[in-house]
Picture 1 (tube, rainbow, N blue to C red):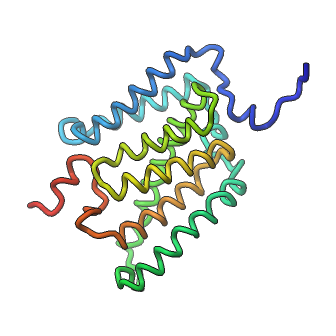
Picture 2 (cartoon, rainbow, N blue to C red; picture 1 turned 90 degrees about the vertical axis):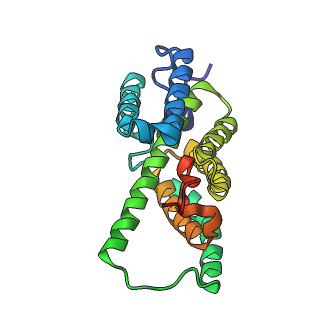
Length: 229
């Protein structure tokens, strides 16, 4: 029997797999996801600070599973490989959106203002938070439960897309992007290029999409109240 273990096997293995029940991991993952959906559809109105409880539960989960920064995709390792995988795909999508946007005059060149730069930075941070949730938490938990990486990527894509119901454009975009990003994350544990690609693609998609469908990128019940006073 060979005693050699590949780097991929080491990076995908949950170090707490022997001590942490699989059923407990499954229930934990479903509970956190249900909590996020509840917050989107109701909790942000009735319990606006409930996201703090969800964040605390996720951080405690990292401690229980002994997650490392490398496993979470927050370390420098894998940055170059992840960038080389995601950026050609991002360019293939963003360049046509740029061309379409300028041709339709939905994109124009303006002098950047401090408020605009802060808004862009805020959106980039929000995209990083989304990739942390989808990849660092949910995808890691699913990979510790299921051996098929393509299946876990598909599940993450469906979960990411369902969090954007009922926005039709975002549902399609986030489901596809969620699957592609998950495939990359399964091979190269780094979320920084994924977050940057999402930020650029999301801004371009919002700029060129019809406002009647995009509703200022709103999801959940806020999508139905867009434009109402």
